[in-house]
Length: 267
Image (cartoon, rainbow, N blue to C red; front, side, top):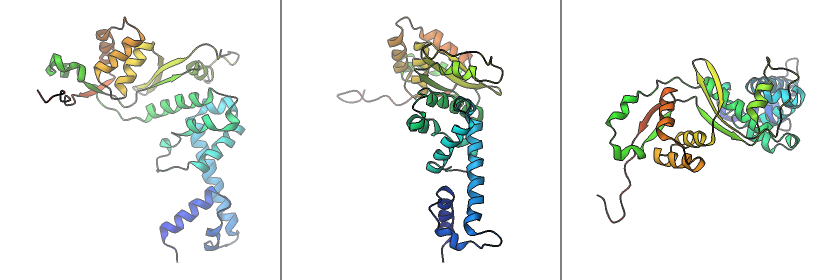
């Protein structure tokens, strides 16, 4: 007699792989063969998860057409089934899958379009948190400012691509001109994606702003992030850039990590 977890594992394996047939001996026929019953569930699971992916990645779907998208989604679902019950969280690795899926080799920009759509879906479902009040920085000593590590509001992310993925995304919206063409040689994209109120937005950043915000977003200190921005543009203005973060309500808080002991002993 199998335990319930063993039965669940065997049934899941049968849903994702037609070759896994050992569970059929435990299923009553009752008008349908056990294999047919499993196939009914298999079709439902695959079609439902394909619909989830198509909802999250509509531009990817449009770029390759629904038939090809369904083929790619089928392969992805079988290899990477959901690990949790929240279906809006499903598909995080889909873009990475497309980047190495041989039939997609002729569309080198496709994976980055998928990464953009995932970032937008993530932003849409991110929790709301209050913005940091600027006056909370008043207690920080001047010598400690460079060591500050900032926490961003949860919806924001940054994405760089060698392809003009923002142009590709906009050209494939329902309201876009159907005759508009995208020049794939138009240059790279350095994008910030976030939600404001109930609307997800994307905007292009200049190289220094992208380096500054991206470094802070990765949990690096203000000093390191500033140096990254200065490496992109020696004229980078920290005061202006930081003021923009506050004005755009992007920061949710900060921490001051302990200072590393100096060589030769502590101070």
